[in-house]
Amino acid sequence: MLVDVARLEREYFERRPDFNDPNQLQGPVAPGRHCRRGTANREQCAELLGRTRMSRDASLPPFPPEYRASGLLLHVTSLPSPYGIGDVGPAALAWIDRLAECGQSWWQALPLGPTGYGNSPYSSLSSFAGNALLISPDWLIEDGLLHASDCQADSFPLNQVDYNAVIPFKQRLLEKAWANFSRGARSDLRASYEQFRYDQAHWLEDYALFLALTQLPRFFGRFWAKSAELVDCDSAVLANGK
Image (cartoon, rainbow, N blue to C red; front, top):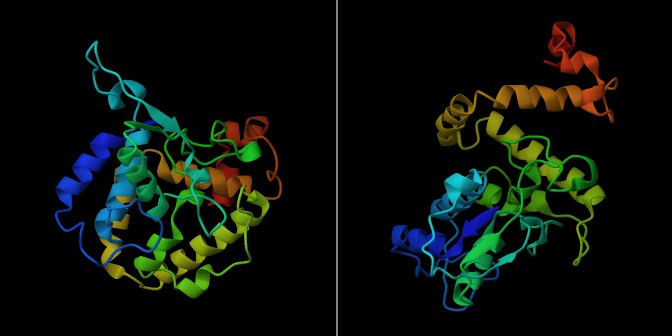
């Protein structure tokens, strides 16, 4: 996946005339850049995810013959984070700033889908869904769906991702955020949530059902293609999953 750093920077700051506001995000930012944590930042991260999930032909602009540019390859999980794994949060924005200031034009981010066996970005369970591990706890705190105290955890390794520790930690945070949302926290987000469900209905419910079914004891740990009931969409099995 390729991300046009220059275009993201330009469009982001064109939409953010207040980016020098002293109410800045807490975390590493490139010198001279001041990015306030807020709705625009979260929208920028969502736009980044959306663009990287476009097809190659649709996402790359036409290049003139004399075009020359450089960039770097880095998966989002490799960004620094106190939560054990890099995410699409403040560190991602700081990374884009750093690339732009170093004269780089492209960020090759690799696939961002939910991973399967081995936690490889090239072993994705969906062509549409994003990896829930890349959701930023910082944005969930800012949205009022989590408290900072919810995100306290034992220290994680600094130079690698310990998925055995990160997955249950992130899962607990997401379940907590969903419980708070379901109980009425940030009810103003309900319309956006319902709109997302409507817009993505062509894949969302089937994918959620698939994940639920794979957690049933009879399917847990099994490759789904070897489960005839799932492949054939057996109505009784699907009903049980629902």
